[in-house]
Amino acid sequence: MSGYALPWLASRAGYERGLPMARLTAEQHAELLKKQRHISVERYFEVSLLLMLTTAFLTITTTRKLDPASTVVVFAALALRLWSYFHDRDWSLAPRTVTRIAIFYVFFYGLDFFIFTAGPTILDHMLGATVHLILFATLVKVFSARTYRDYGYLATLSFMMMLASAILTVSTTFIACFIFYVLFSISTFISYEIKRSTEAAARAAEGPTASAARNRRAIEKALSLTTGGLAAGIVALAAALFFVIPRYRTGYLTNLGAERQNITGFSESVNLGDIRKILRSNQVVMRIIPQDNPRQLAGTKWRGVALTSFDGRHWYNDNTEQVTILPAAFAEGGVQRILLPRSEGWQAVSRKRVRYRVIVAPLTTDVVFAAAMPRELASHMRFVTVDETSGVHNPQHGYSPFGYEVVSETGLPSPNELRRTAADVPPALRLIYLRLPPTLDARVESLTRELISKAGNNYDRARAVEAYLRDNFR
Image (cartoon, rainbow, N blue to C red; front, side, top):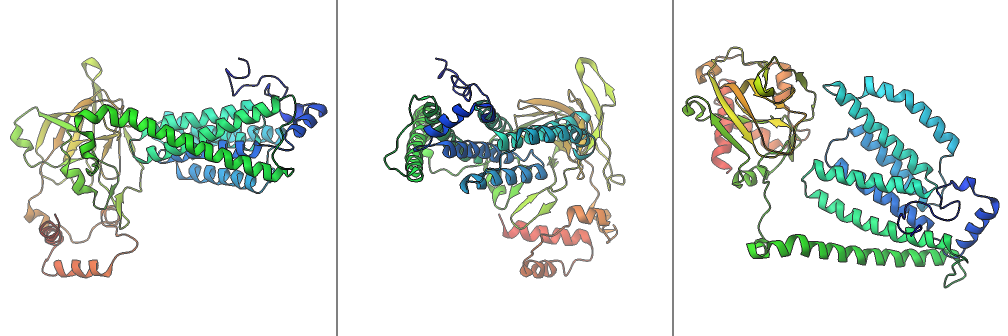
């Protein structure tokens, strides 16, 4: 079982023992080229492995946990390597070059840790710099892979990326990426077995024609068709085992035409038209237990995050900078009391404090939900962060139900007080809350001016626009 039990490790010849091709003897190297003279799956195998790794990296980028610079650099390097394969260019790095680059990155890692990587804590800095180190090692391995051990490293890394993506996201895009990952994985392992068997054979394989290029195209076409057939069979069988059969007796087949909804009821980015779907969902995601008179919470707005940017199609936050708030006191049972600062504009608001307990269902977001303006938190959270819109986040949240106690200020200024406020909005607040999309339809501006023409202050202008939207769009 030495050649099959551990397929990614080497077995017989020096090349298969994980030794670089440069360390093969001249006779061994000549024998290897002779065996690949008529039929070779070398390029097909390396392209399949590269596409397998690229799909895994694309999947993890959909979680939006990687910084844009790393994403662009890695995709550019993978595309460059793929281009070299299709144009028969050998852009592999020599071992001496790899050593020099590795020594350089030792010093760059320190700069990345202290300067380039952002984060509220030193642990976040270390995590970000380590992720960059792993991506760097991956790219170096992509351009210097020569042994089965190198190929095994890349295949294992791609699997770990897919595993991390499955933990970090619940998006349906993961399913599409996973299907392509399975497709390229099948292609990689089939071509690997052919490659290994060809190199271990006693005599060279012969193709149907005398042209090595035609033989290569023929076997690549055959492998592609075989891979597609196997992948289709796996997807069909998996769908039957995991989706159709377990749900058949629960009316699953009667709901195939039902419209998908956002069952979490919350998202840190909202596409145009998705709000109506979320409002129709009856999934319970949060329970509130008042500690005082429940009537104090009547009509209270529950906030998660404020979305400040709109590009004409979806709302999102483009400023991810957050301030860390550490606990001010400790209580029994490991409960920590965190005091939250008041945001700009709340100092002059009439304050009405309410105390309540929140129990949140498992969500993929790190947002801490609270009523109006939270002032105190009591929970097992080690620290929280606050963004520019006073949204509270728990960076160390888990994917399980958890609870916390909150003291919020729910008092709001009266309409007369709001009408007497200054008409000029501070530039900082205007940049956060009143920014328009880059391309705005002229009809929207014309309609807005018509709606606010009779209002004499900002409050009445906002209420006029709100009333129009409420009456005409449901």
